[in-house]
Length: 144
Length: 435
Image (cartoon, rainbow over all chains, first blue to last red; front, side, top):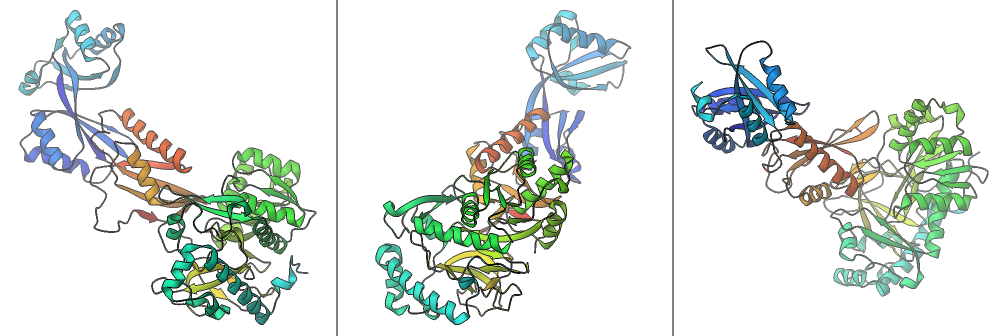
């Protein structure tokens, strides 16, 4: 399995809440690889790919945060026009639904990484394999 | 010209009233002592015999009755007549899932109708008027109580009950209703809906409304009177005592006359139980002296109010009660529905994955009571998608709505963010400025 673990944290819409959560990670030497926030009027969900998901989860829960771990799919593509479009086509063709996604650029070699939360990880993984799309493992992410 | 339904009672002299009350009280006390074991035990424990209660001045000797007594004796433990004499039951929303039940004999129904007829007459109603009853009828006393009073007056009664506001407005207009009864907040909601429907107040013929079952302000009165083009009269009652009609407003609109030939009223210090002099603010206590099936003795209402015998311009001599200033316990009245925090707690707990930590925030927005329930998110409820959290909120909202009949806004908050306290938690923040 190529799935990687994402941690999600419930964040109340209150001043200083986000900074307090991020500080917990910093204080425990946990590095953030990718981050995204989904927000509503009253609360948000902070989604993170970190260097050590188990430790992050444990430390956040110790500080009374609501945390959950979800398996997501991560892929790496060339940072070129049309690349994301073809990736989305692959998923659409195999009827994989995307709940949400976020992307970040690699520090070198003109690459982009995409984190995908889909309704069926195995199906997405299979589709990417068939199409020759590079999938990242947790180790890959940590080394980035 | 002020009209009265029963001038003899409504305008009696103080000495006449006291003599009548004393006679009825002594009879009632003797009857409950003989027929209701709970009262007999209480009186024996307090060393009071029925013959010790000769006049209203002896009332203080009797033990109080409280809401818990009604729950402890649920359903019929405080009834003072055999069930074959009981022709009607009503119930009021329970606090911990257990409702209270009250009963009426045929004579009680007549007493009740008489009380409501006085209220309607004080509001100017006659047999030529049409009465639109939009209080609920199902077990709640509001609907049938005023229904009975209006029939006694000879009004044309339209038993609409609650719900479907557009239909209510069409009936108001088409049937030519001249009187209405409902909660004051619902009256305003009707006014707003009329505006949305493009129906002006000139198209309806309302002369007055009798509004009660929830606390309301002078500002709200003015707004109702202006928007519906009718007089807005306050009416007071409790299921335990009889229902609506325990007290009612007259043309002076400055407090409610208590039907004291049926219900003796006292104010007491809620902490010590000591009887307070007229004019002091205290907890309102009623003693039923004409009821047969369910005559409560010195029932503590938890309502805070002030009594006065100052001369009233309407000519009635019945003692007046200033609008209750609030409740001394934690019950919330939201859009006319009684809600206890414990009821909300039990709904949350019944859902399985919610924590029993919550906070209730009550506010009045555009004259409508709004209830927000902050619920602590549990680990089990949380997932990484917004969609699933919104589904959780909806699930709680639906459960509250179907169990308690109130619509609430659910806000999920972080675990442990609601303060924990030893003893009595402050679970309610009431932002309504009613007093």
